[in-house]
Image (cartoon, rainbow, N blue to C red):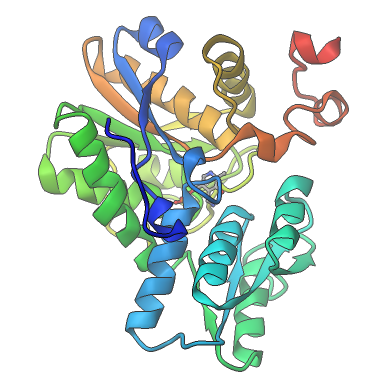
Amino acid sequence: MAIRNAPDALALIGNTPLVRLKGPSEATGCEILAKCEFMNPGGSVKDRAALFIVQDAEEQGLLSPGGVIVEGTAGNTGIGLALVGNAKGYRTIIVMTDTQSREKQDTLRALGAELVLVAPAPYSNPAHYVHTSRRIAEETPNALWSNQFDNIANRMAHIRTTAPEIWEQTGGRIDGFTCAVGTGGTLAGVGLGLKERSEDVVIALTDPYGASLYNFYAHGELKAEGNSVAEGIGQSRITGNLESAPIDTQFRISDEQGLEQVYSLLQNEGLCVGLSSGINVAGAIALARELGPGKTIVTILCDSGMRYLSTLFNPQWLAAKGLPIPEWLRR
Ligand code: PMP
């Protein structure tokens, strides 16, 4: 690949490499490839959505110089919006639950975002972080509510950038794509973008426990079972971004299965990623087993494990959650 140069920092968003995952590929007889979204400047896949949401708002005249961007987020979209906001001269107010990792909270503060921490609440409760962010946007002069869950500029980022990149990087030799859902922007956008190029690419949902989408796509019923400590994924409703997403099949992956991939990628491949990435890789393995050997499957490495040193790589935290502690963290 040619070495890239960028005219400005925002041009660093996207165009991420696709890495072959050796262990998962050898275990399945498929080529399992992963898009290195942790290499975006804000460290996650959400930089793409943040840039598209801000550009779309500017084009619609909803943001002007000195404006404020307000968003409810698990953290990564907030980090993306804070970077894009800094580059373009907008303030950011980010609403997040106090259960998200310390690293994401510290990063948001370091970037200059105004951080509003709220207790977790069900979506039906007006105190939910998404509704809180909408109210703050309504009460703040010159503010945009970026509304990543229902604003389809989010999935447009993946229709216009992630999907064509994957198509080009695989030379069109791709049989399946899978990832988990937070807003659904990545799954729906990459799914729609790939289907535009080939109807034959199988698009699969990989759902964590505690989310309602597996049961919806498998049985037509939005119903959650179990729970998950994964940040940034796990959805209980059909968001605007998920509407008419072309989903052919679905898997449900436990935190233990996801963590097994996180630790294996770290130890065996030198890749340090977060739990949503581990769950995605476990989903890609499940899809490879469903499609059979010889296929090419693509998934997403959403963010870096370094965003979770205080949780996924902290033996006390793992023990408190009843999760397995990898051998080298016990030393
Ligand atoms: N993984 C992580 C770590 C995230 O922060 C997010 C975004 N909430 C996702 C996965 C899911 O991405 P999307 O919102 O596009 O569904």
